Image (tube, rainbow, N blue to C red; front, side):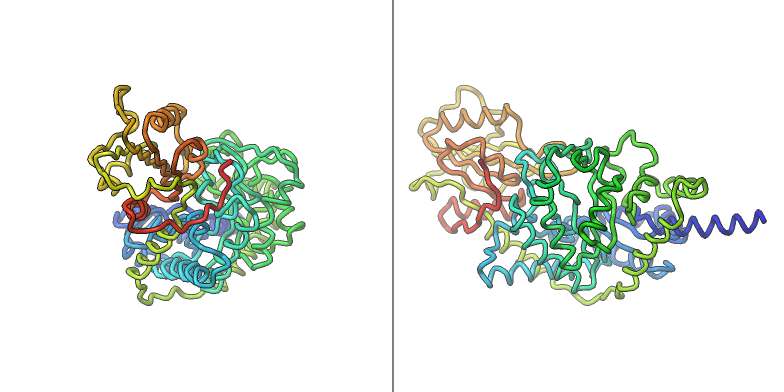
Length: 503
């Protein structure tokens, strides 16, 4: 009898492992001990992995090995909002979603063709390295200009624009046989808090939520999106606890919106869930099918097993989640290993970046800037991109903003301020400090003419309406900077359209 119980528990453990997508660090793939640990998770029945980092060929061959030894196909997920190059070395880094929206004129068939080609390129590269669950698109409507974690990851602050672009991604990804994932339900766009750091509370009515944030998700469901990621957000009008733990939020997805696909949690390592006990159990009881990135998958399974045996987690809840998972995995096709034209993809990425840079305000007669001696360039924000900036080709008068002294005479010069801002998890901000804003305002007042360029978060430009020229580039990449340099020298134009309001 004891032996039978152990067999039953072992079978239950395997089913519970299948509800988990665990972390896979690509940089550690060459380490034999790390490989053994991953192989053991596969033997235990893990449902899949979310890949962070690694080299293209190493990731491709390791994933293929994992799929070979797994009893069921593995979900291989990754946050590739900016293409596979966002995670995997040797793959293409595409512009962020807001940059895509700035570059593409939806009424222009040529532009629409470029967008579709870009999404197909992302799908091809994902398939090439073995990623079958790209965690895209972001369908958040970025309504808070101080949003530290969505910002340029969103297409727009307009739900109609977000919906249009999101549906393009979903259609092409699904047609490629991949598991598209709309995130972060019910909407992470209207908050100034990063859920990696603490729990955002979104104080809006359910009617406001439905008329704005829910709009893209409703359309995504109608389009046939395979999975939806629920965010760690509190919306008191619906439920005060995080949405990922809320039966009401999951019921909204299943009943009100009619979603029949997979529901994923956001990463369970995020600090929005700090100090909440039994998170994995509560997520499944709320209605989630997949637990994404628990800190320790083995410990998570032990907790879940205990909850099932004690009656805290009903087995039929496990069964319904497993049914959806297996049904979707049965539709996965074998990864095709055909060659991918990475050079063509790199050219396409550059073309989109060139098309995205947006002139927000321009006083005639300032650009092109010709006299290098009269140009002073000031670097603000995140320092790392500044150290190698192509903007340095414009002038020998280069300053870090925090290094300038009070005696600098700019009354006969053009002050170019380049603000670099990265949108990144755990950072807590995608803007610049009040001290930096005040220093930039001093430069604007003290110079003959001023040009403010945002590389990254376009919302920082709203603090400097008095500047003569305002430019939004949505990336800190060399390509974005080179596009701006060409324009400043008079050898190129700026085609982008700002997809958000700066007021």
